[in-house]
Image 1 (tube, rainbow, N blue to C red):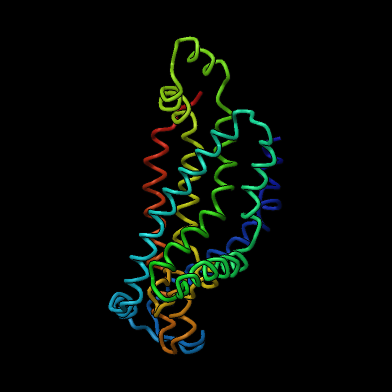
Image 2: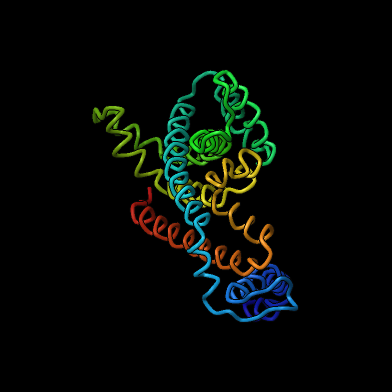
Length: 280
């Protein structure tokens, strides 16, 4: 049986492996090579060494986008996870209308980022018109607009993951804690949070990655305005690559550095949170 499986291994795995090589590995390697080159098309590539990286860091728009994305990620990750966990706790207590509330909170996640961006631009500009301003007048309006948008989109999705984790906690453990006289806060701190750590690992990873990579919502809501003060890194890379002739290699260098930053941060997060996971 084992020999038969080995015999047909390439037959079953081969197509997926070839697709993975064509769709991911080869473009990724090409991207690394192009980050060290000057080009406009794939037929006029010239090697320039690290000058693209030097130009990327000397570009104030990129540095501003990194700072803006980092601040946005910290604020969004905290609010989304705290709100999603709180809602999950509330909606696992068997209150009336639980399924309706879960559905309503999850639904914004089904709407595309571009559509969400225009919807919230309309709502926020409608509110700000009371004060005679728009979302693009000041960067702080754009920042909090993006935070509101991302929270509205992602809280429901993370809530579902937390609900799955909470419902997976064995009932006999909660019953034993109640018999021993543990209060709600003690149960939350000593039982619920430790046993939900696998869910916390997943939600933190997803919110960090999604927040750093946010593009279409940023494009639709502010397009980086005013100036480029609310442009996040993904939008800055797009603008660099497609809006400035001769800067295609710099765009590639920015993209590679952005990839490494996100990989390092998420790996550190995964290492820290997985150490705190326990099996029930």
